[in-house]
Image (cartoon, rainbow, N blue to C red; front, side, top):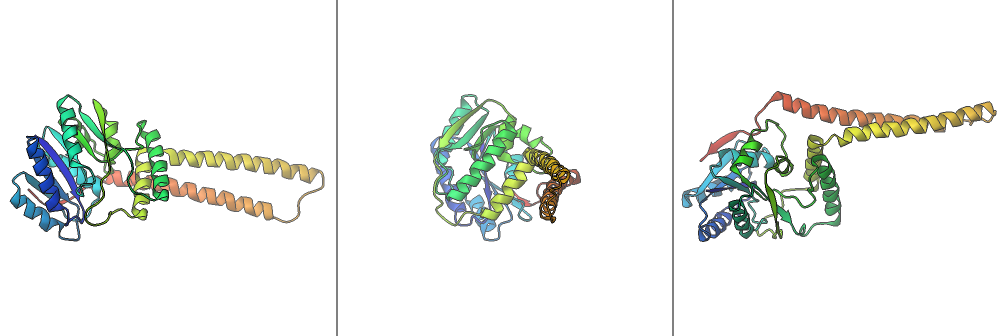
Length: 302
């Protein structure tokens, strides 16, 4: 059996159609399956719609969070209750094409244990968004040593891979990177990102930036190294200016005023404050991990 995990946040307009389309396609391919909707604390009627399709379709199960815990928590909650020998994760809005899900399943039958959905294109995105996405995935690729330039959450995992993910005790998890990090026999399938039929993207530019910063901090120490290298550059500049000042002093041509000194102090202080901020951000992540709070709280499930 294949389990399909569907994180859902304010998707009331797509629940019925998603359940119908996936059930029809998988039934036509004679693939035994279950659909797991995970309601991530939606503020609309998503919970009601999920319960309605669960009554209509015997293959539909669900998890209801007590509040919004985020997409990563929703994915791992779905993985935790899944019963299939393989588990697929896809968006509830059908931007991940259901037909590709069948192709992934056939590859799993051939012995592949992690099947990655890889975007042919990024769809309709602004130039700024594409630049930011390219920068983010460049950093993440270097951190994980895996090419993530076209990565997505659209994946199919063998039960062994799912169990390996669930065994990771970290509080903050990035499914897109972690599912690649665990290894196993991997292949990929290209897909075209579909246009949303109902509603709007739940990701604002601010939330995407926050998401990127958090995940870079989780999987890379690059920001800490940036502080080190910036400190080294400032030290070199200070040595050069110090030599220049001594030469001017011994030649009796010492510069009047304190403009250079003030600018140097302001620059150095700024670098120090940024460095302290980055170190503090990493400490806050450590603090979150040592508290050992659950990734999510379930209020209802089927």
